[in-house]
Length: 512
Image 1: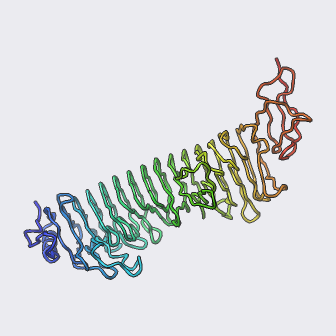
Image 2 (image 1 turned 90 degrees about the horizontal axis):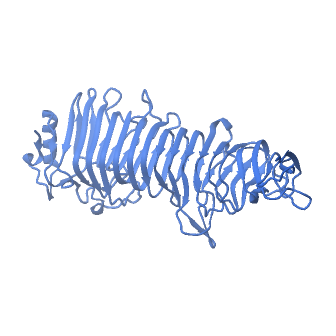
Image 3 (image 1 turned 30 degrees about the vertical axis):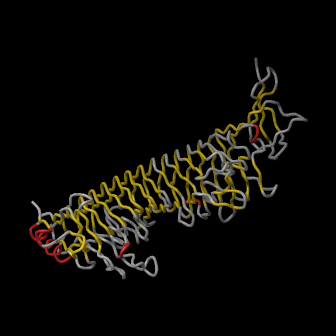
C-alpha cells in the first residue's frame, strides 16, 4: 500500500509545478505512515516549500520506479543560498526513519543561474537532512537505488557542526553524474553514529566534519566500492578520529584523507594539480594494497611528481602496506619524490611505516624524509636514478629512521642523500645491497654523515678490497665476497665512514 502523488494532483509532465500537490501527498503519507509513491514522470519542485518534520517513532518513505521517476528542481528558482528542495528533520523524540528509494533527482543546475562566487549557493542542496537535536534523533536514513544529476550544490547534505543527530545512514547503489559546480553528491559535515555506503559511482563524495563528533562512541564509516570521478574527502577531527573501514575506493582527481583510524584497502587514489592530495592527522591508520597515482608537471625539459603524496602534521601509527607509488605519465625519467613526509617537531607525535611498497622505476627519487620524526621503511622495492631516500634532520626537527630489508636492485643512483645530519639517527637491518651502492650516500656537504645506531647492511663484491681496489661505505657495513676463495679473507667490516675508500677490517676467512 502506498500514496500515489498523482492521486493528490501531481502531473509529472515535466512542465507543471507539482510542489503543492506533493506537499499535500507528503502530509497524508506522514499522517497515515504509508510510503509516498512517485510513478514514472518528471515532477517539478519549487525550493524551500517541502519541509518534513518526523515525530517520535515516525517514518517517511519516498519510492519511485527507478530513473523514470524524476524529481526536478524548477528552472530559474535558485539564485540564493539555502534553496533546498526537501528539508528533513525530527521533533518531539526520536524519529524512526527516512528512506529514498528508486528515484532520480535532477538538480537542474543548467537551467538555474550561476552564483557570483562558486560557494555562494553551497547550501542549496536537494535534500537537507538533520535531526532535531540531542533529544530528537532520526534513527535511520537509507538511500537505495538513487540516481542524481547536474547538482546545484549537494544532492544529499547531512548537516551539522559536531553532530547531525542521525544515528545510521545506509547508502546502496547510488549513482550521480554531470556535476559542474562545487560541493558534492553526498556531503556529511555533522557527525553520525554509523555511515555505511556500498556501490556508489559519483563525482564527489565528502565526509568532512566541521568539528569533532560528540557522540558517546567514535563515528564509524564503512565504505565499499565507492568510485569518485572528481574527489573523495574523508576528514575527521583530531579530537575524535573517525573509525574507517574501506575497500575498493577510487578517487580519480584528488582527495583529502585526514583524522582517521582503521584501514583502507585495495583502493586507488589519483593526485591532481592545485588540490589537497594529503594524508594527515592519522591515528593507527593503515592503507593496504593501495595505488597512489601521482600527477606530473613540466619543469624545463623534465617531468616531475613534485612532492608527490604529502604527509604532514601529526600522524601516529600511519602505515602504508603493500602500496605502489606510480607516476601518471609516459616519460622515461620523472623527477620529484613519490612520498614526502614533512617536518614535525615532536617525535612521539609522528610514527610512519612504509612496508612492502614499490616505487615507479622511472623515478629519480623515491622518499623525502624531511625532519619528520620516526619512520620505518621495511622490505620495500626502491628505484631512483639519483637517490632512493632523502634524509634531513635538525635539532628542532629530528629524524629517526630504520631501513629494514628491501630491494635496491633498481636503484642506479645512491641509497641515501643527506641534506643535513646533525639529528639523523639511522638503523639498517637485514639489508643486502649491490656493489654499485657501496658509497652508500651522497650529501650536500661532505661532513654530513648520520649517526648509525644499527648497521646490518651487507655489500656483495666480486673482488676483495686492497690497495688498488677500494670501496666506500658507512661505518659498520659488512663487505662480503660473492665467490669466496679457500683460506682467503671473505668478509670485512668498515671501521670508518668514507664515500670512496673505507678502512676494512677482516672478520671472516673462507674455509674448505
